[in-house]
Length: 334
Ligand code: ATP
Ligand code: SF4
Ligand code: MG
Image 1 (cartoon, rainbow, N blue to C red):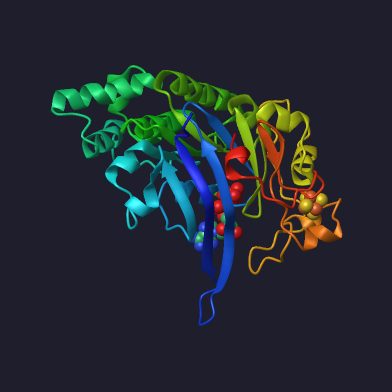
Image 2: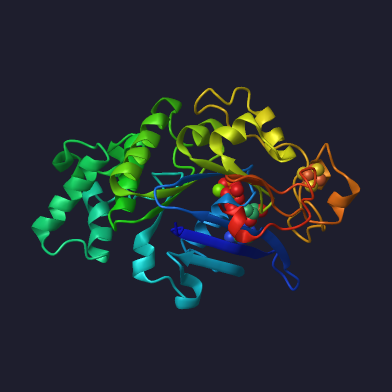
């Protein structure tokens, strides 16, 4: 089965500090993974680990420093080096944490949905446009659609606004939605409703998600697979349930121990632990070495490769087998 989206060896540097000698911050290092049709992958990791940067690079909102993006086998960066085509932008949509920030207070919700529909040629007449707007609002359970379309963003609750943001992302008929902490600013009581909506859209419209979150319980609830990011490096990937029950990487273990009860839905926010990772001139070896309770001499010298633990999971840590040899990309992404 060909993956929908393949991310290969993606790297991102930012110049920081300014002046005559800006420093290079390595936000992402050699990120590789695949997303299949109707798959939900959660991406977890503490603040600053690079989660949003991965989503922004895939959405082509900023330039990539190295690596490839394949969409249905097409080498997107080679085909569209400067800007993403309208076609790619319609297929890969992004939703953000703050639903208010992404909606313009002076415009009606109907207007917010008309724009992408027009831009992506999804309606040929005013009547069709209005019908499409109403259909989108109904799809995200905002009823009665005709009434909601006339409202302005401030007249809605946070959860309703996030539903509008989802409807807007749906307008160009995407295959992939990159959801960057879509529920973290919402009341705990309405978070499950929004996740359930996203789940239904996956079933009904065949959408795949990269679901970015601080909340491990929601990853377990919503995502087939969870990937753990540390200091710009993917360190572990496993079916979500497996990852929560039997974390293999010492960092994943630390994350889980920081959550009081990972089975209580939508409350266990991750907190950063002392010892911030080094992104400017990072030392060689394992990125987690400075904080790892199991650190060994080899860890400070060699970056651990991916060790395949079984068909569906891998870990990058010298504790697991040889670990020094990078497993072939194909096996790692099975
Ligand atoms: P959070 O959980 O707080 O949203 P994150 O995992 O999404 O964090 P990113 O926003 O991807 O993290 O940031 C990764 C690293 O890249 C951080 O060190 C951040 O300071 C840096 N960074 C991100 N965007 C820029 C930018 N435009 N210019 C310079 N540095 C940046
Ligand atoms: Fe810890 Fe070494 Fe594994 Fe890194 S490679 S997580 S330092 S044991
Ligand atoms: Mg972020």
